[in-house]
Image (cartoon, rainbow, N blue to C red; front, top):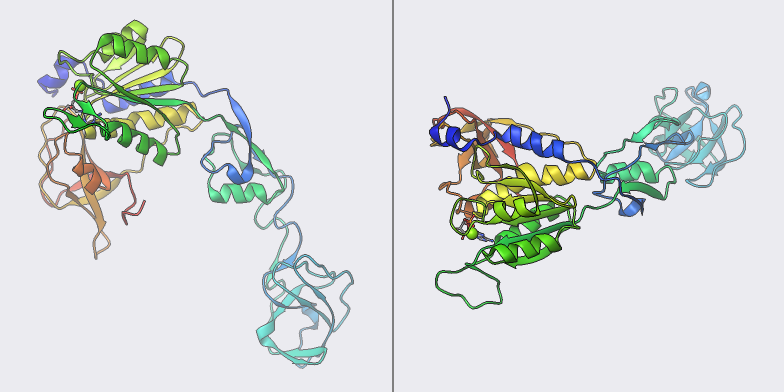
Length: 414
Ligand code: AMP
Ligand code: MG
């Protein structure tokens, strides 16, 4: 049962729109070599293969004494014949009854196969006895425990994390090949828009979308350039689109509805191609996706502040990531008990703004942020998740289980 609204507009569903966008994106062929230490948040363009095993040699997990396990008998007196410190191995071989002082990470001397931790020895000059109940191999780290030689450490398409970078650095690799960073330009459209240096004026508002969109991108590790504010004027729009053609992505907000000053679709058509216009979602229905002649991907985001954020999160960031070699992964859908009644009309998929919290019982619960209109930007500021209501659902009752996807951490810190 489709609502009139959706049937008349020929809007794509959220999934159809995302699929169409992702299908239109080819991963960039531009790559560059960057220092491993500065590769966080970059996407690997080539697999990284381990050439050495990790740990590379048998070593001690504790500070203590390396001994032969077979010597560990009650009243055995061990003679300390030397030391193996991290970075300074002991070069001899342990004989019966002998021990070598050893520190964490130091190479295990030849002949040794157990470590007695220093807390469990009774020292007397260069000898000791121990009450330790030993096991063979105790406190010894073996070569390859962590990584095997020839193992694929990270595959092409991996968005590098701190731990990945550590694994690569541990191989003594100094540089990795990553996909080049996409170039992204962001501008706002609207005769009503002022910048912070302008005097307030009746009938005008300060532009917030540019700052919001660029911050959403920055949070996703995507740099962008500021293309300013464009008037509701076909020629002005045309000129911005023409100067932006050499970028990989161009994002505008506003001017995509059916108002008399909404020219983005028409001017995009003149400068390239419209892939689709309108998605059966709320907020964010009048999203335009297309390309500029020359190849730049174009997104005309709706002007309402919440709509521009939701469409940026749902479509633009996955698209830029796909261009950078990162395959789309849907955010996990969590089930949460809804603490309010949610109003919705069937017809469009809704991304209502919610505050998810883990209750004392351990169950995830979600409450609404209140007014859900697309100009209520404070709803995004309060929220940590979207309450995802299916296209043909008609809201939710208090106490019902609903689907949520997080867009910031549950503790509100990230
Ligand atoms: P539009 O899509 O251009 O019809 O704009 C829809 C609503 O969003 C209007 O209330 C606009 O004033 C508002 N709006 C458009 N662009 C911005 C912007 N950059 N910052 C804040 N609000 C905006
Ligand atoms: Mg406008």
